Length: 429
Image (cartoon, rainbow, N blue to C red; front, side):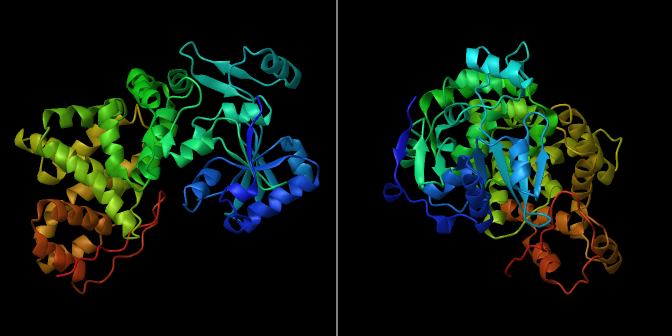
């Protein structure tokens, strides 16, 4: 298949929009006689007028070749070897060798598998578990998930290389699966969550079959690795349009596969329960727009808050718990079941439990309670949830202003493993 080549004069990608580190790597690979392409999300984002989060490269150089070219190269990955070209402790450019199509039935792929002694295997369900075959630029493009993610920028002549009509879909703001979406979702069920995230975050409309296939294949999401699902959930929460993510999860039925207990509760409480859960997702977007970074536990607390409060109320009504104990137990019971689907660290669930257990104490401004409360490690995170609840219910606003603006000593710093703490929420009187 011959690609469509768009010359530099007919697209908007400029070297001024590419990081200096990525340019250095591209030119070094090219100077050593290999193909050097910018690829994936960074190409897509620039064409959409967005600032790329990172820059990924693709080449016909093998990982061992890249290690010879770059002294600052580290090879990573088990399922497929990648090269990280290091620029300082936390900065690197990821370079991947062109990969073959995942279906090992093609003669050229099968031959490559034998020659290179690498694996390309599926489970009986069609899930790809090993995919270590090098390929051509065309194969690399065709094996990607969506057309908007399959464009290459060639540093040799600054052109765009398009095997899948991705540029046309970007111009039409359309998210389209490459190949049969049902097969692609079976191969890698996480692609369904990626479809929802890209559609919401990038403002792209899903092509009809790409959208319909999610409902058909949604149960396959349960086959995905729990650790990978946890990472994808964090991306959904922080994508910038989590409110739209929630609506798409409900529409496609993925909410019931990803968060079965929450989905069952929302279905049983279609009014207030659904509305407050939707408000939780929307609040994540508000914090992001305000430039406030919420740690992982606070995000989970806000999304599941109404559900956890209802569980805690039921436990409290049964008479076997104190108010604090009911909050703690409700959260832990929920996460114990969720953990079989999504590998949520216990440190996160414990922090969520503490956030919920501290909520009743914000109504008590007595000095003894104030001094004890502000010294709790979860104080700032609990106050953030209190702010969300006040914002949604339009209640306890006076208490929120007092806790947010009073001259209270800051609690001692606490190390959080998952992300930085957010500053105390600011609320104008």
